[in-house]
Image (cartoon, rainbow, N blue to C red; front, side, top):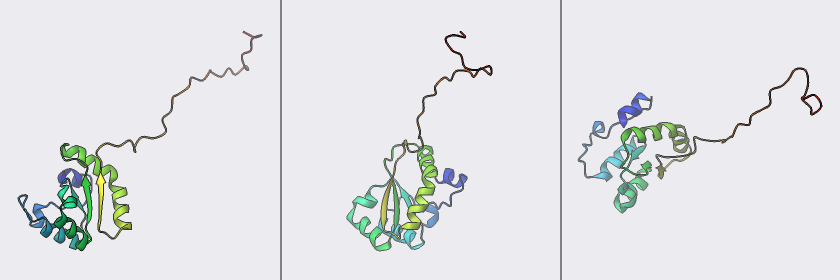
Length: 135
């Protein structure tokens, strides 16, 4: 997902590139390190919020955490959800000093609006309206 987000123009840091391998078990360490750099966290790991130790690390470091609602979707679907939501995410980050958790959903109807059923209009006759007498 990070490479897709980078391609879309987002400034993305990989977990491993920040010195934390994928097998890193100490969530507290990377949560604190990432938050101290002012980065936001985007993850599908619900334990960041549900585990009391991780939650305390988020609170104490004033981390800004966006949790992907479910982790079984393909990366491209999550990347699309983040790309579409990025302006709102930036707004939330700008307006809230942290700590916070915010859920990101993959499916949404928020991009669809104003359902309309077209009506067939009668062609306009330049000679005037059609009446029962002229028909």
